[in-house]
Each structure stands twice: as C-alpha cells, then as structure tokens.
Length: 95
Picture 1 (cartoon, rainbow, N blue to C red):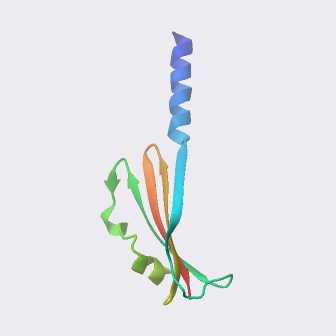
Picture 2: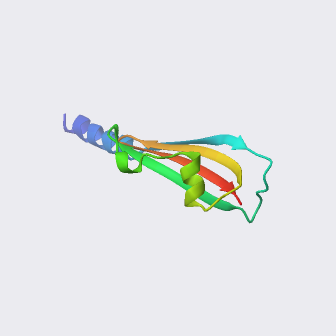
C-alpha cells in the first residue's frame, strides 16, 4: 500500500509540473520586418480557471503599444498551459 501511495504522489507532482505550449502565426503583412524589427507582447494568465480582470487584454493593439510599434509586420499567438495555470500571449513585430 505504501508503494501505491508513493507512486501516486510522484505521479501527481510530475503531472503538476508538466506544461504544454502551442504557438502559431495569425497575421503576416507586407510591412517591413526583419532583423531590426521591434517586438511587443501582451499576455494574461488564468489560474485555476479564473481570469484576473486587470490584465486580461491580449489584443494586437495592446501588444503593438507595449512594443511602441506603429506598422505591424507579423502577429503570433502563443498559449502556454500547465495543470493549474495557463498563459495567453499575443506577440507583434514591426516598425
């Protein structure tokens, strides 16, 4: 019985520390980007299914403002999830 309990505890800890990340492009424009492009990011975190309302803006406009970008070149979205916490990102590059 002790072995089953230990295996359950270790398995639960491994599951709690495991995470997954998914990302992909949303928009690509004709505006110049390249190596010297600026990068802006907007993100929010959901903990145990609850969104914190003070930082729940992950719009393209917010990400561009954070990076001081006026001409958007690319927009990417990334979701990094774990057992208790999930973080959503919008990443914008441009001039």
